[in-house]
Length: 270
Image (cartoon, rainbow, N blue to C red; front, top):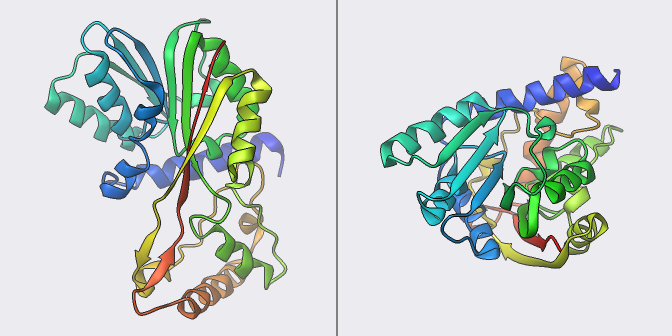
């Protein structure tokens, strides 16, 4: 599959997945998003960019902080997510948020436009993370702060899916690998030129019901490679049958532990 063809199929798959999430907001999605605000220290009158805003969880909170003299631009390529964000914004009556439906990897803004740039739990979906970070650096004002969140390499059942596929000779690349450790997060920001880089870690994992976790739908996201797309339906059914066996093997009296070590990362433009 050619690179452009793969990119189109990959991004369509991701958009379709998030468009289908009509009940996205919950305690879990909020707890893995809002801590970014503690890292940037927003003030009234500032201008903020929220990339891959989803349902606008952090964009709305940021808009309430920067007030009527400030502004938040929030972008996402999922119309379903943005519709949920739009409804919340209208219910609250906020006037200082601009929603943009777009692929955030292809957005462009003037240099030194923002006081803060935020990206919650979505950076691993980008096909070129360093290029995105270089853009963010340019768009920030001097002294501006970037903050993003991501998960460890061991999180979100990625190792289990990798293990199941390996049994059948299928090698999956872990989507969380590029930002899967605090050291990797620091290096990515420092190589672009960010200073005062900080990484805070929070364990947001929880126990899930065996039956709930054991039903894998066959989806797998990776911005550069997805061997599952090349499988026959029979091969996929074998994987989907093997997956619940592995889940059941990890079951305890409390259920199955869903690992979600989250990193909250920030850096400052000189």
